[in-house]
Length: 427
Image (cartoon, rainbow, N blue to C red):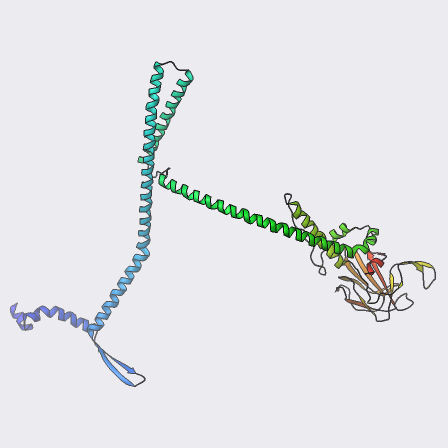
């Protein structure tokens, strides 16, 4: 053995360090030294340095260690951390449960002591009553009291037994200090609510004052506008009465009417039975205002020509061709051939063409049963189905059909029947 050591090792130190040198040779083989060259671009200089095997091995060990540490930390964070939090929560719940159970136990023991003292006093009273003469009702009251106390003691015994034996027992009593704290919180909240109620009451009074001012202003506005609109429609009251109509019926029809030319139907303000009467009145006034306003827009009010010179009124007259008395169903306006004739209200053209006796005509439907007829035209400027607005030129004056000269024959009809349009034409 000694000869073998002497043959391969020159000294004892070499023998002892041989394993380490073998390991180092393995490391050097795995991580051989490496030359690195770096060029300094601006100056064009080249720097060369060498990374030793030790440096490369240390770098590898550091990266490997950091990777293991990162993997382990991730594992602990993802898996163990939720478990630890869950255990912590369970421990806290168990502590709270135990604390509340002990609180219950103290309450039960206190109640037990009170009942025991009361039972002792009641027994003394019953013993004393047996020696003295007392009424039957008093005896019965003492026995009932004793029976009640015995029942409460049995109940406490059952609850304490349940507390000690049932692992899933749920405490029924809170700590007195906690109850006191909750009471203080509730009282503070009540004080805050009282202050808020006072502020709300003051705000409500201000809102009520503002509401009354708004109601008065809206009421005055609607009343004034309704009065103005009624004044504008006053001149046709006699005419619409003869047609079997009245203001309320026309207002209702106007609010219910819907067309592309006048807009959608009016939706009344919905008021409940218990709504204040002043709001109901405002809702009714607004509905009346809206209906009257639509009437002034929808009814054919005004003249269809720029210069209103009437040459032949509505009614009975001598026929210009036969000389015999005959009913004239419209109004004739003076005008030259080519005079522009205007629509007096929004509507839809329902007829545009020749008509026996009337010559070239245009008829417009304005809704609510009212139509206007333009006759003896020289030219039609609209087509059937067209929508027109006030001021739209619908045709040119002429003398077509049964006519003795250039003029405009103008009719207003209700449900197809002509009536005297003079009150509608006059401003």
